[in-house]
Image (cartoon, rainbow, N blue to C red):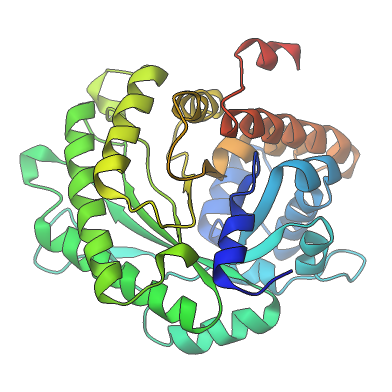
Amino acid sequence: MSERLEDIAAAMVADGKGLLAADESSGTIKKRFDVIGVESTADSRRDYREMMFRAREAMTRYISGVILYDETIRQKAADGTPLVDIIKATGAIPGIKVDAGAKPLAGYPGDTITEGLDGLRERLADYYKLGARFAKWRAVIDIDVARGVPSATSIGSNAHALARYAALCQEAGIVPIVEPEVLMDGAHDIGTCYEISKATLTKLYTELYAARVVLEGTILKPNMVLAGKKSGNSSRPEEVAEKTIKLFRETVPAAIGGIAFLSGGQSDEEATANLNAINAIGPHPWKLTFSYGRALQAAPQKAWGGKAANVAAAQAAFAHRAHMNHLAALGKWQPELEQAA
């Protein structure tokens, strides 16, 4: 496999393939395991992720890369094989989440700033040795119109941090995924999501240019343009597609390596339907695929339930969701295919 950043980025958005976001922190995975009645231990987390990485049909056909958490990139499978080697054997690229999470932005109630730049150069060198060839950093932009959230300071601070992170990644031979997530949790309408996303992406690319980041060796992991969950309005896939592509054409350079959407709290099928609608109105200047966590994992997690006897059923559930998103990345998904499964 070529080590050129541009080639790695291109492989991450190969036709019909997308990223499996398996980088849940220990706290997040515990919440997911609580739902299925499984105790979260180093072994149970390993068994669960090993089950997915060994799902050959899903991994070899539909998954281009896997975003890992610090614990997982160092873990070995039950038989002693490093999990990274299992991922590589499927042809997928190992990646790593490197941010230290969003913390309150001092002086700006309701805004957050993502931390983790201190010591990042050294950590990236370590992750490169462990096999990571791409990384991920998530900035969190909440919307609360009544409180004036997000502030311009919050957008600017997060964009600057993303650019510094991206430059350090490229210095280390690692492709940066830049993830400026405008949350869909609020009561805002789809137009507000569009405006805040536009301000965020405009600032992000100004900062990436200033940091001398090579855009061809980057992947954007954005939100789709959606109405907030508390608004009481659900956005139709056609409207989501139209507004999302309009946004990108106004803000995202054609030079970037590709775009891999986050699911951001959408249901499995919603995330697939929206991705499909976006690709169906192409062609676009960028490759547009998925980088889903919950929208790929909720079904296999439920099927697995922590039992070795359920591994095959869980792998089949994972393969189905990955296949649906593969079709959506090509603009060829149909709702009837969900029932067929």
